[in-house]
Length: 225
Image (cartoon, rainbow, N blue to C red; front, side, top):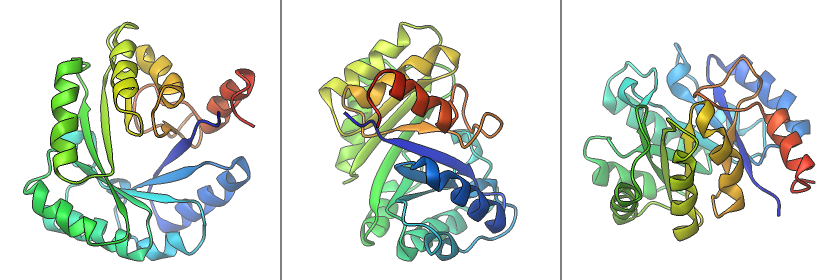
């Protein structure tokens, strides 16, 4: 088994993105997620695509979903569509997006695959709530449903792992220190991939481990070559 790891980058500026990607390439991340909401200036997605062959995910989260995006909603959607047209492999769209079915349809007209994501920064959804989220996401035509909540205790990890056992090929894990276990285990029980930070100082969510540390954990488990 070779668990997939996606590294999330804060898109502060194009030069920082390119520099970080080049530093990460020898570590062979399976995917790279670009958080465009961290940028204070416009970034041309094509300039990112042309410097790497690693599959890319475009994301721009608003404040309610744990992001920093402050510009009009139409600009956010146009950016995501532009990223798709530039060659990004995936686009991550929050389930809370207004007119989500129309937006999802526009994104699916590109060659990129759609991820519909749910975030709860206060608690872990119940398995029944996750099933409802999954159904709504799949009804939008997405390729992957991503469910991330806050793990308030170690038992919360079980809910994410149970969901993935029932629906392999999707993404689910808990945030916070208590959720680290589900971050590590999720791709071993059916999760499409898990997420890591480029280093210990640039995590974008509570409990996110650096790539090198997560890779080392899998090596010690004799899971990652």
